[in-house]
Image 1 (tube, rainbow over the protein chains, first blue to last red):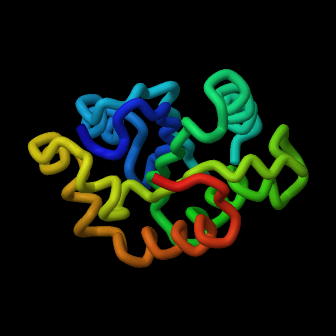
Image 2: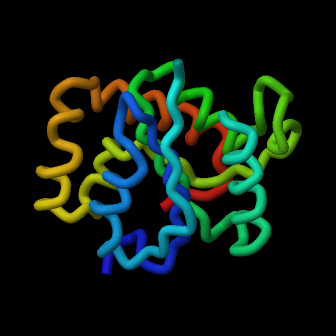
Length: 43
Length: 109
């Protein structure tokens, strides 16, 4: 288990950067719980 | 930062304890990443949202920070993030967030 194990993750993605769902996919097996994932955009 | 997301962060810190929460950013520019990182550590610098005057001191990292990247599923990283890693400036983004973390975070990984 890595250092994220047992942590609660708050993912704040960005549409023009790395979106929330992409981070979710990469981190869902990290042993941490994803509490929420959002993707903001600036227009 | 969007006011609704500020509220979700306040709620999560209350529910789970600030020491257990880790904020991971996917911002595309260093200035934006800094503002987000400041908001979840020292409070909303614009004094507009629920985090105004609320220095939660959360652990905050950019997804490109090696500490987070090394925890990611490699195949998913290739598929979902590697393209943006080439386009953006991963080192500058990770450093921008680290600067705020070193100054204001009460918790770290």
